[in-house]
Length: 483
Image (cartoon, rainbow, N blue to C red):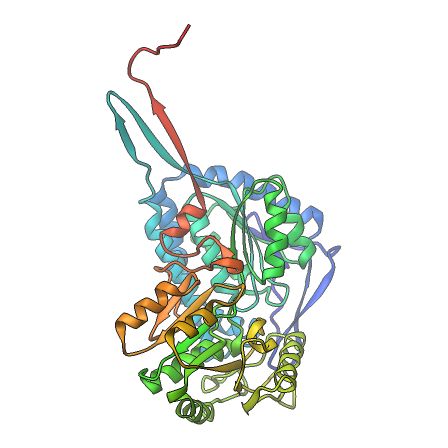
């Protein structure tokens, strides 16, 4: 199985290698085998990438928004044409089933390129009349943006950050997670093929040290990170030192509240999407499932029945719907949380075990009788572990849902529409769902409150985070001064 890229980095429109960089392996999570070996960026590589981005940004920003949009839309078309190959690569990179990557990864990346490509020509300022004088505003790019990706949605994140950045006239240097370094290179390749000037979108590989070097470089104007809260705090602080703009998309411990009157089948589907899609490796997952007592046993029974339809195995088999964890380390972390859940007295309803054989597989796991103070109810696990908590009243469940440092997502299932709107008004979370869960269309803003981050990705809101406003006062008369 050969997935060795042409070279580790893509800079200034071409692949480039520097073997002096620390080598790291790319492991296929389904088998544990090494499928590629890459080198982390050396200082020389980082320098080259930032210089290329700084130079290209001027050329790119000088184009009209419509011209930039045309490139992004062309890239979206190419990405859709190659969806199969990109999805297979994404599966090798992440271990996620092809059944999922073929509809949720490159397709989502293409949606972002198309959406922001369509928006690029419409980015305008405004005119403000003040008697005879007036002010006009210019929406201008920030300059060089650094994107730091997570390993759960590598293609999507590369585009969610790249598309709005490029639409606004910025250039980007993107560092994917060292666990999933392959797909971002293809995004860069496709953008060049679509007509973006060389240097507009660059990819450099590496671990934390490379990210740190990028975030603190004086050539960088903006940092966008998708990652954990501890990483986010470090990156935010480092970026602040140079007054850089930031977007932080961090973790969560999101509540999913299911009332007695909810449609049981839909609620169970929502809980499955909120906990087991991508083998539970989704930051917005609704991992604290609060179930009203009247529906609790029926919910657990139906959930257990539905989990019998989990088809684990070769992620490239289109029938398979549940893949491995991204890495051995991640599986070990999840196993540690499962052990804690048992130890602290939660009832293990189903799953809980690693799967023998190759690859980093672990069963879909459900705990019941979970209380708010248990470790599995407080800490982000980032794996296929669903915790069911009991509740009686709306007031009680809302207070408990919000009793967390996180605030990324929240969801409610109920037939009572006024209650649904009351609940989402009360949730302290940036991305909320009523009678569904975990959908993230590019047209809608995505992001967190509290420790789950700052700023928003996607939608028109993202434009504010990748551009700045210049106000220009125009005097039409004589100027008066006191002396």
